Amino acid sequence: MSEITGFHAHVYFDADSLERAETLCRRAARELPVRMGRVHRKPVGPHPRWSCRLALAPEHFGQVVPWLLTHRDGLTVFVHAETGDDLLDHTEHAMWMGSPERLDLSRLRQKA
Image (cartoon, helix red, strand yellow):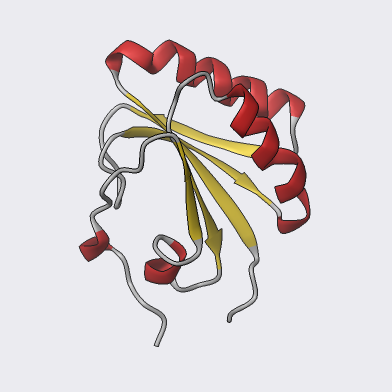
């Protein structure tokens, strides 16, 4: 297996849950060692819903993921590794909090 260089946690939301998602992501960025990305009000990349990305280093996984699990307020969170193989990272090296969604895997490249 390739080395894990980081993780992304994607918080999914829609118009009705936008405020909860923004609150969760901003709080995570204040309280945790994560970098908050843009709040996308449209599907981006392989993600089927609106989302916001939280990026974290491998050494912070044990702190960030349990926090998200207990603070996600009913939102779906998709967590995946960063190894350089986008397809495996979004399938085999991934986990869901809440209801899993179907990703558009055709948009991902596999490491040769």
